[in-house]
Length: 501
Ligand code: NAD
Figure 1 (spheres, protein in one colour):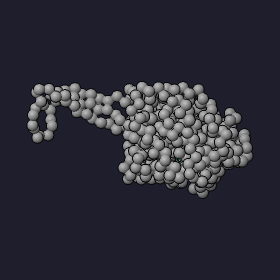
Figure 2 (tube, protein in one colour):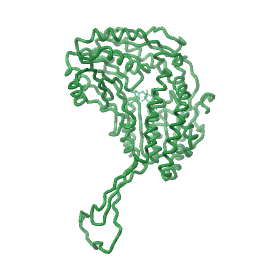
Figure 3 (cartoon, rainbow, N blue to C red):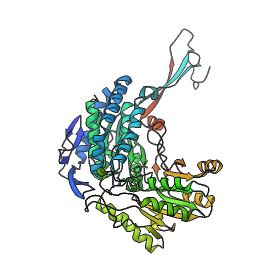
Figure 4 (tube, rainbow, N blue to C red):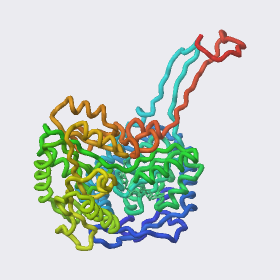
């Protein structure tokens, strides 16, 4: 593996490292040290088009490869990835900053999808109806859609690519993956590993880059489908440009996830859950809880319990057993910290201030400690924006109905959770809330690999979620075949529309 020794991260095309033609690069930081650890090459349109051409050339043979052989490569990938997950976790911590245990958790959730991909023969089975008309049978088959483009965000450099490429590849497609330029090495590492597992050259290609390569992917007529995960404005743009170019597109966007706490909830469980879901991965998760909606009279007691727990958290270098690492870049840290000023101006109360936190690590890292803000006005940008950092807001409401209306009024609909011991209230919530993933006493309800992941409203553009059965639908084209093997009783000329008979 070349990652740790290569100063400029290149691309992976046709089963080998690919330098491309670009002279543009971007810095890749070690956010815990606050230094540029390496550069990443930013592909040109020509580089991207070259990768698509390679993927297109690899498609016929791969699509024709027996499904059992494709399955075996997924089994091998699952075993090797699991055996070497610490190596990948170290790459994630070095470039993203998340702590080692969290990096391993991300890989574990990605492995779930690889495990699902090992079931590909069952997942690709079609349907068959015998004798729909005299001597006529109808059956359906699922064929690969073609070359799939995957564009992923910085916050899950391993898991989000793993949501897509194992199932896309197992279904017989070839792939061009464009990871986040902020932490590009994990994708290259995984592509290299898959090559070692026997994946033919050209089936999985990784092109690093920015808008230029994304636009080239969206405009290339040989790309049939796009799976995107990132912020809402870019997700919308990807969806619009990709579909305008005739591609099928699933574009998962940003989030603002609320946790509704009813007065009968176990407040110790709620406090643990709010801290874990609010500050894990420094809040840089699309399923992070960013708003606690406390139905009175629980707010004061709950805030005291959360504050007590936050006081025990350690912030520092992800390799040192800390609870929370740095943010991804200095710019992002400063932007997140800016919301604390906004909170004060807008009349909210900062209960725990993460600025000036004591850290276990280099003082130049991109640090911001866990922050808790009470009485956040719902017209404040602190409430309406996706902050994407370790900032947990509390909004106090008087009833379930008021809390529900708040959640349903959000432009986002990724995840939400209700905490209560009232089964009837929880059941009502699961029916009434306009959010794609719902937790009942579960703070981060990321569905397991054999269900599907995706939000509603501005959290997902397109109608197909990630992984699970919806991925099989997205990565295949169904063909329905009506067949009759002629016998002496065939019906002769009949210009009427075919019908049962
Ligand atoms: P981002 O939108 O900035 O970038 C995502 C990808 O789009 C990257 O590969 C980037 O290179 C590319 N990109 C960025 N700007 C572009 C442009 N103008 N034109 C074309 N391509 C562009 O997102 P991010 O900051 O990397 O990730 C964080 C965001 O992702 C958050 O909003 C988070 O909620 C979201 N996210 C959502 C999910 C989900 O499942 N819904 C999961 C993880 C992250």
